[in-house]
Length: 253
Length: 92
View 1 (cartoon, each protein chain N blue to C red):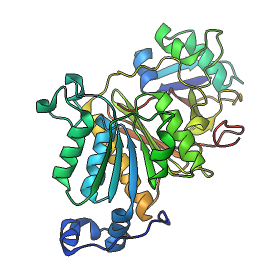
View 2 (tube, chains in turn cyan, yellow; view 1 turned 180 degrees about the vertical axis):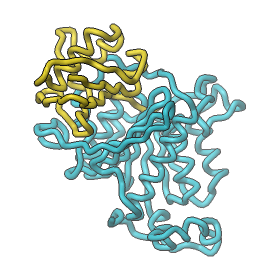
View 3 (cartoon, rainbow over the protein chains, first blue to last red; view 1 turned 180 degrees about the horizontal axis):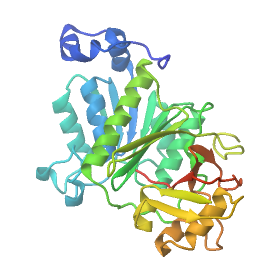
């Protein structure tokens, strides 16, 4: 698989030492690491799911992370939102996330945006990155991000979860189904708050991060055109082919 | 014929269980199976599967024997078929 058209950035000796174990990965090497350093990724919401994506991408050395998430930390965030801490309750989520990620990896650039994805900011946020990762709880935001990723031909890693189940796919505009192909309308009974274990958001977040790294570096096979579902209650994982919807209002109009 | 309904995530939660079995007439479609399932499952699951007019929700994701099926295009089931049904879920 070819990676994304990203200009590789040379590594310093200190970075070579930091990322040594992953540069030993077959088909990744220093070339893959240089592509990660040259890459930028937008993560829509950095809660339980997106926060894990951000943590893994920061540790892996993705050069620039644009994080969009509004609001302040609540007690009910703390079962899963690993970038948020008890001592920051009532304070800005995005500032807590930035601090934690900078502590983890001071070599990378964190761009904190204290807003959720909206009609007003979506074009500029998508426009400044190579890959988009969708982790938002509200379908209004997910559909906005999907539409803009299709318009700007940016790949989007699509992550979702509920209770002990989760799903993941990678959207390549013009090649694979987009989110509106799968779900042409907003769901009638979705609520922003739902049951979930932190271990589930962590699992799918790690998988979303792995998918993003693979896309950037051209490593292995992605979930383009496939839906991965997982049930951590039974530990059943399945991968199913998904197809574009003729007449899709977003990607076939 | 016997058809297995496999509910995923939010739908499994609403239906009280992930796995269900139905006895259907020969020639039944995936959509027929869902309508039959609607007659046996909970109100909460029905709210996810059907519109107020009783039509299938466009937002449901169907796989019949692992192959994708559009809610609007009837697909024939067979004895032993597995119908995987998911409703939209998100992050948080």
